[in-house]
Length: 115
Image (cartoon, rainbow, N blue to C red; front, top):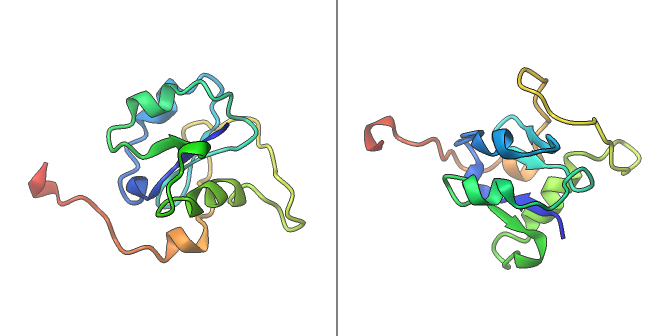
């Protein structure tokens, strides 16, 4: 069961998860990171290191975050609805276009005075 990134990542984009992924299947989007559903080998390294607890296995999705299983897959679909496999993320790569749900999500930028 693949992993997915939940709404807790929106506007945080810490990125430490990308350093632990052995297959580079975590891609940076405009407002959050996304896990590619077919490139992921389900090792769980990213889940264990995420500082905002935003990563789960798809079979652990709850009703309030189940849409993010679909969102993580849909950002990798082409115009025909087929999954595109870019072959691995690297720093400096053009960000993945956010899903409309993520684009419209209320701002969650952390307050620097609270850190």
